[in-house]
Image 1 (cartoon, helix red, strand yellow):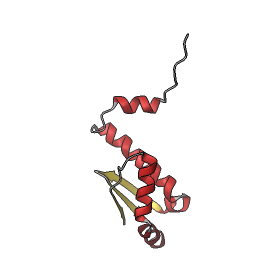
Image 2 (cartoon, helix red, strand yellow):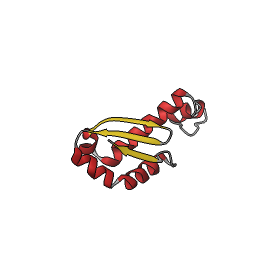
Image 3 (spheres, one colour):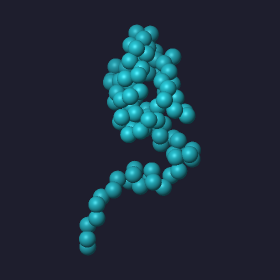
Image 4 (cartoon, one colour):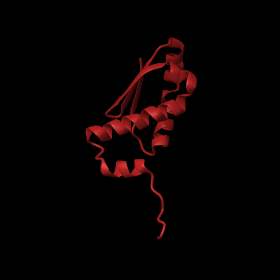
Length: 97
């Protein structure tokens, strides 16, 4: 038996699921959410009550005005870091409420 290069199951699913399908958009939203959590850290993640991603816009409802101001001031850097994690420019707008 000849071993072939291993492939992640997630990569196989992504190649089979059209990005314009409901499932494809849901997978992208989950990736964006995960990247956001990596970028902003634990404290800001805990202050984030709800996140929605649609058509390039990430909306985050923040429970603390202090975190909302801090995150708003760093919005461009956060978007850039999220897009770097994703490997392409998916997040075009970031809104904190």
